[in-house]
Image 1 (cartoon, helix red, strand yellow):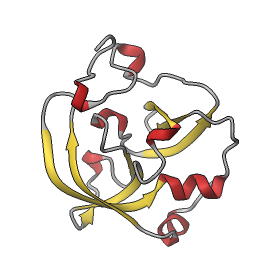
Image 2: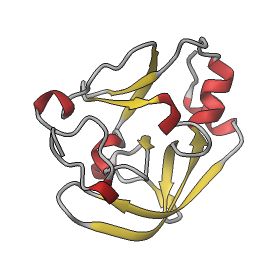
Image 3: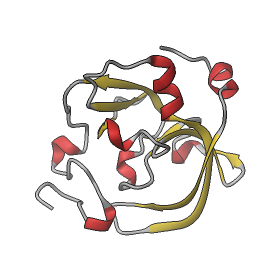
Image 4: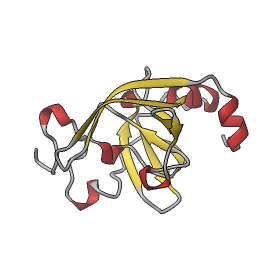
Length: 145
């Protein structure tokens, strides 16, 4: 399934208000992101029942993997506004997929798409020693954490 910029903006808006956490140990509290929920995108795309994971990919070749359960039920959005302003390019604009309950390397900047898979496929940082999941509350920074 493919959406143009105008088509994705025409979908019902979703908002995330909360905190984000970087693997380098900083957090930013009380952020507001506007965009569309990944739930909405997947409901239109209609993944098979065998789907277990997604891989977000970007215009730069970056990838990050996630269990499908971590992008459903409002847990992930494709966003284009942050704190009432267009998402700046240096922070992933024009569009970034955010998964705020995980470390922010799981929130792909300059997102170009989301592939739905029936298996796990580690992404860019995961193949370079980062933790495959990245839970900030369990401090899952590196493989083995």
